[in-house]
Length: 268
Length: 169
Image: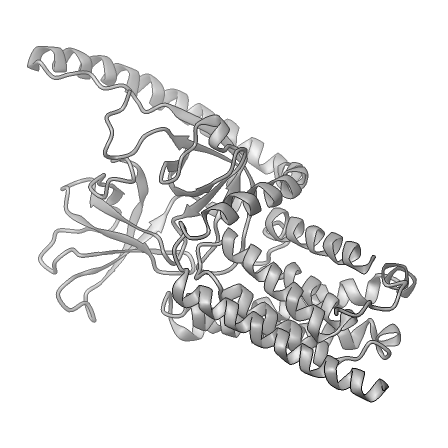
């Protein structure tokens, strides 16, 4: 009797494995679309967000002293820059009036705190504590003080999942700020980005600033991605391989801002 | 009753994985608390229940990453099945320490390699990729598994697993 029970249990285990593998392979091949699991995304994000948010307080205590010192220094620099930019803004306004251009206001922002981060190389989305209730929608651009962070890929009533720029699947249209040469930014892996699609004849220099171009209708234009750290033309073929040193340290992010709007919409 | 313990274990692991794992990261290398939790369940409850928990946790992970949907579910159910096959319930009471930790470390290597091949392959040089996405995270997960399995007193494990695993069907 015991032997029969053991044998049945043995086959059940194999049957369960077969079912689990079939289900997951089925999902891999036939359900690999975020919309297919939209409801599951929302439910899981809400549950995991609620479990993670108490732990998020812990994050605040790590490296607080050093961060405060850096912030005070940054504050002084920014105050100076702000004064210069205010002057430039007024001057810009006067010139626009003279030329008959319409004035544009900045996009409205939703402030959010990073409460969790998955840490697998190549796919490490952030969980932030602002969701549909605050007006967050899928594909909204997420920024930090130093530039682009990524975009919202899933939303629950109180939390959002953000695909950061260091994700394997991330790419966005980018331009060199100095001369508006356009290429495609993607994550090369392990601490650097890659700008592709610029011909060998393209004028690119080390230290050039790379910003979003706004032509892919998701990311608003002008957001800083990083600076050119090196250029490799040896194995480039038609295009230059331009390596980008990104400026936003995703691993240390705490506060982010979600831009209410996309490249296709006019700022309010 | 075991179901509640497993559920709590998975909930804690999810909280740790998404909430604090980056705080204990060393040079971008993180431990995989979810893998430890799934292995802990499979090691105790056997490969049948372990596989179900592995698949369930895997699908939750899939919905929270931007990787291929089904990749975590595939790997975690496979790993849980192997873990459950590697140890029987009876030997567990005495072995919930070094052996269990080593099994988790070994399976972390398998788990990371599968995920690397399914998701990350091609993002960087293969040698750097294997080192950063497969080998080092497995070693770090082994380190945490040894801490969790060996430092947590056996009496606590016994309290968690105070009843024999219930049959699935």
